[in-house]
Length: 145
Image 1: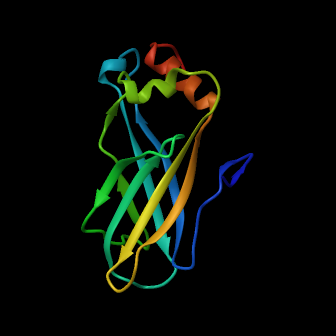
Image 2: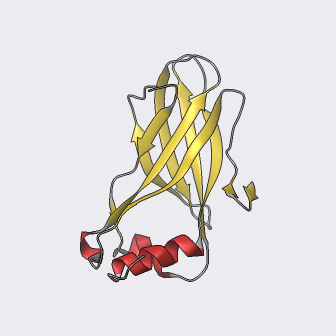
């Protein structure tokens, strides 16, 4: 996966370039039950084309694909497509990674289908650093960040 010290490098092909693949956490100090996060994504087109759909799947280490986002009416806003997953609680099993030591790496498969062509697939890594996870843990515990 293309990673630098600054994080994951953007995936791209001849038609699109990923701008964002990461986490948007809405954490309430001392309230893990009332806290949640979303996966957020964006990409820019390299040429004008109307889109039929955008699909984002998380690729698990065993190769299993988990649907994260379906956009059946995608549009470009300010030159980019933006999407976000449904909210996920920070206390559920799917968020167990948030409480493990070290960095957490995720891989997303982004499928973009223009109306006038075949689907394009990009694989985009997302890195959640140990430092970010430690910050989340402090906030969730009600400590000063």
